[in-house]
Every structure is written in structure tokens, then in C-alpha cells.
Image 1 (cartoon, rainbow, N blue to C red):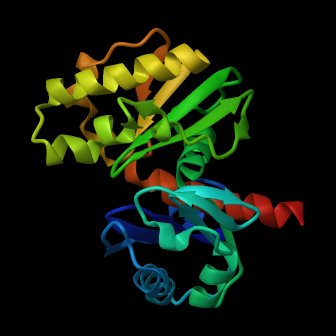
Image 2: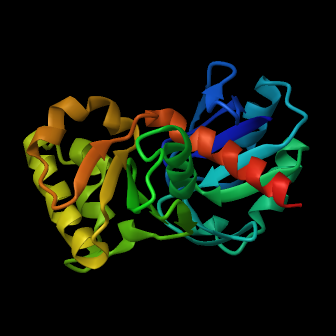
Length: 248
């Protein structure tokens, strides 16, 4: 099935057509820079631009950085409160002119890694963490997703832990890779204490540079970099739309 996958992030909105049987992008992804917080008008214009770039008129899957329940957007992190409480499926349907399925962005990345990447074939407990503007999380047990696990919002010294250990923090605070990895270790210690996952997959754009920081990480369970890198969110959003179509 060919579906347009769109990944909404804190610094850019990216999309590409996806072959959901193979997990491969059918064209080079199109990227539209945005800022966080992102105005509603600007975000919808970026989604519209991606659909028009590919001259798309079929189903669309959108990965959104916030709680998503039945297409409705709940609490939102870095993208801004203006998105909260809105019918995301209806908003993006009007923007693209196409049928749209909306899913939490980290859940989307997790679906892609479980189907085509580092979690493929795993039937135990798997935690996917995405490091970017914030920290996204997706939790699986026996291959089944527990949706909207916002573990980047775990409190740490009065603030969400993503403000302490996200990839964007490394750049903003000008941390070296070892310095940032120590913060990631603190975060991993907290989530392992709570969930004890058998496998932790670390994703986001920073996973492309895993050789620079993975050697400094410490975890009780198995720890691996994501295999699909920045494509995971796009592929997973398309997968979510494919699964929704089959369920109808």
C-alpha cells in the first residue's frame, strides 16, 4: 500500500510517500522548517506544502508530537498549546484534501522500528526513545503498542526530563558527547527503574551519530541505536494509516 507519511517535529515537518509493505520511501523526503512553538497556520501550511509537493491524492498518515486519541490532540509539548484540544484528523484532512490518520510521533517511529528496524521479531518488552527537540517514547509488549507513553515528561528537579536530556539540549548547552551521554544515562536509569524493558531502542536524528555517544551509555537491559533514523517517523505514520484502513 502506498501512503504519504508526514512526521511533525519541533524544528521541521517532513514527509514522503511510503511503501508500507517494505518500509521504503518512494521518493526523497520533503522537509519544511518550522519553529517551536509553531503557529497553527504555519504548521498546517507546511503539511499542505508536503502534500502538494508530491501531488498527493491518497491516504495520509501524520505523526504528531503530543497525545493523540481517536484523531484528537491532547496535551502538547514543544509544538505549543495552540494545538491542544483540536481535531487533528480534521485539521490535516482540510489541509491536504485527503483522508488522514493521526498518531503520536514517537509511537509512529516505534511502529516502524518494530516492523522494519531494530525491534523486528521481538516479542518481549521494547521501549523506543526518540531524542530531538524533546524526548518521545513508545512502549511495546509482545509486539503490541501501549499508546501515548509520554516518558519525556517525567519530572526531574521540577521540570520535564526532556529539558535535561533531549538532543536539542546538547546543542543549546554546548555539551560534549560524553557530557550529554551522562544526562542520557540519568534518564535511562529512571525509565529502567519504572519499566525494566528488555530492549531500549534510541532513535531520532542523533541515532545517525551513535558511534559518538553510545560507548558512554550505561543500561541494565539491551541498548541499541535505531536503524531507520529520521525515516522512522515518516514510515511509522504511513503504517498507522495503513492499519487504520485495514480496521475499517
